[in-house]
Each structure stands twice: as C-alpha cells, then as structure tokens.
Image (spheres, helix red, strand yellow):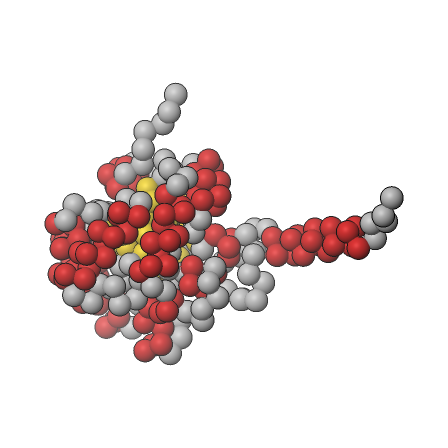
Length: 259
Ligand code: KIV
C-alpha cells in the first residue's frame, strides 16, 4: 500500500497531534531517496549546500542556478516527503523577484520554499503564498546575514531580541507560512514560540521543545570533520570510514600483480 504524499498540511496536522517532525537536508538524488526510504517527512534542499557541497565559506555565494540544479537532482527521487527548497541570497529582495524565483524553484521540482527573515520579508512571503507556493519561515540566526552579523550568534538572549522573534513569528503565521525554522535561538524562547504559534517550529540549535528538529545531513553523518559544530554531535564518523575504505582499496590496487 502506498502511503499518502506529505504536504504542508500533513506537517501542521503532526503538530496538532503532538507528533515530532524529524527533518533533514539533501542536495542530490541518492541522499533524497535514502532519507525518503527512512520516512523523513520534510527534506530541505538547503542553501547550506554552498558550504557542504560546493566549498563556499558561507551561504551568501549560492546562486539560483545552483539551487535549481540541486533541487532538480533531489526531485528526481520523487520523495513522499515534502521537498522544500531554500531561496538563496539576493533572490527575494523584492516582491517580484521573490515570486519569480520561488516559481523557478517549483519548476525545478520543489514543493515549498523557505526564506530567511520575519517582518522584513513579509510582503515577499505573502506574494509567494498568493502564488500558491507553500512558504516556510526561518528566524533566529540567519546564515545569509552571517557577514553583517560577524558570525553565527545565538538569538533571543536579550528582551529586545525576544520581542522581535515573537513579533516576526506571529507575522509569518498571519502571512500564511506553514512552518518556521528556528535556528540558534535560546531554548526557552524557542519553547515559548512553539507554544504560541499554531504552525510547526523546526529547530536547529534551539533546544528540545520545538515541534521538530532539522540537521544538515552531512553534519549528522560526520562527513565534514573540518568543522566543529556545537549544536550537532555526529552519529557516524563517515569521513573516517570513507578514508579507511579508500586507503585499503588504494593499497590493494597498488599491490596488484600482473598475471
Ligand atoms: O540551509 C540549510 O541547510 C538550512 C538548515 C540549516 C535549516 O537552512
């Protein structure tokens, strides 16, 4: 029996039923297919691909063409999961560019889009939703602003940041967002937001009380030993295992004798 396709509505219903949402990123066909086979309900083609696939120092250099390329690859897996694509840096500066670029990502195979910001991008979020595209918000530490912010800092520590987060989350709900990613937000503030709003919060480095959690899959698998992240403890040492297998195979090849 084939199980029904996951939609934005399914994720909202999961919050209603107190069912936690385990979300992960994927950037290509095999990873999307593997995550989908395990039943991950939300797969994000994140602009984190800039760092974990393309070797950029942060997400600000990722282009629409790169996002489309990876969304197409992921979409070929035809996941049951909701396939969400990040809107890259500079792709939603205006209402028109936001709507057009969201449509391009959908044409590439995305079923929903995510963009960073709250009230500052509300008109863009409304235009995307009015175009019939499910929209996921992203609050807290906004990786596309890392240069202006001078690093990845936890948000919600001051009363001003706390109030701003509440205002932004409520505005995104009013605009019609179906979920909000909360990145690097103090756990008590993430908990409060989760209790206040009717749509799912998906946390990353925001404590255990969000409606769901999301991780960058290569971080979870220990594929990137060059970074030391506080919010994720790799569950596998994939980099070490790959090195060992390749080393052994290389030695075998090098010691092969001609018959
Ligand atoms: O780009 C990404 O992978 C993300 C997650 C960290 C939520 O936005």
